[in-house]
Image 1 (cartoon, rainbow, N blue to C red):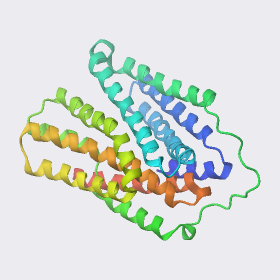
Image 2: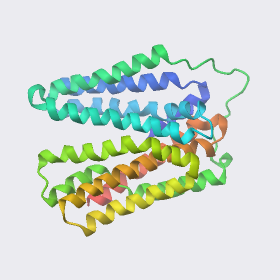
Image 3: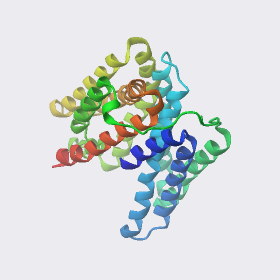
Image 4: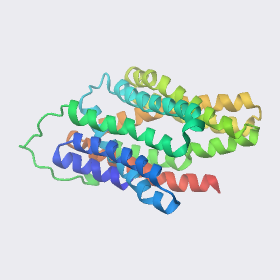
Length: 293
């Protein structure tokens, strides 16, 4: 959480997005190499920290997308970003399902390091950010200078984040309905594939209907997910609940970032996105802890 806020602030201060993005992907690659080489859980910890530090890419990357978008296509562009993220996860799960037995954990982690390394290289070599402006002085971000609408949205998002626990708990709970442990990755694959397929359409809806209505729809979908786990016991209904969860993510994630980037001051897009992601991240720990208990 803190790394995202800090990276967003420095991205605005330096008027540079690209270095934080490719370094973040590089950290992700290095962490997976570390996982593969570790022989005890104590050795995993520093690489886990490096992996989380790689999230410095998130706020600058989102600000980069916002900078290159217009109001008419910003939701669609954020939808495309989330669709590609989730599509990568889909292929990752498929690779693990088919290659786990012949390769094992260690080789799979080595294999997982390759896409992040390639992504870092492509961003470093092919993405042209342009020169930073030199005529404006960055004065830093002050909470009192943010608009009332942005502050209200931060509060609403924090409240929702406290009720939105980790998907891991849904996967664990699914086993109570008779799913075999080997089927749990398939449930993950289902909702990730749905999220990937639906992110662009929901982004377009946010551009056409308005941001607020798609955001409200995403909250309704989350409520339906929770009710499905409460009210139904049949396996096919639980699978349907994971489809709803994928639709919830597809509606929520693009429109959240679209709203933040549009409510934020033009010169503070990365800082505002970083603060937003920091607050969501800080709320995620007590949310999942409470749900777990």
